[in-house]
Amino acid sequence: MTDYPCKPMTEQQIEDFLSDVRNATLGTNRPDGAPQLSTMWFLYEQGQIYIGFEARSAKNNNIQRDPRVCFCAGGVHPDSRNVTIYGTAKFIDNDDPRFDDISNRISARYNSANETDPNRVLIVIKPEKTVAMDYN
Image (tube, rainbow, N blue to C red):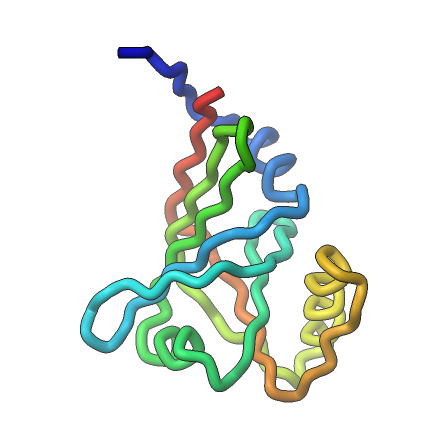
């Protein structure tokens, strides 16, 4: 049996990790109480997570009903770090001046196209608990 080193990440390590371009998993609560997991693009700024997605998605319906979410970003092998954030999602209205700017910056991080789809929604996650571990 191998012992794996495991240590909590510092605030600066979390900031650096979440500032990198990587996919994350968003967990929402389905009507029957089961979790729904979705791979997402995101933007991390000033301690908050921003995520955009289609308004007709199940995750939109789930968050409308129950705003509690879980967000997890992990490293790609051999990077064994991960950051899990438990929190509450809040919708940013599409007439909010930040909506297009944040949506476009999320998209630009991943594929340089602008997200001007009027059928998109944008959430911000206010972290309530963060677990960040470095298993390297």
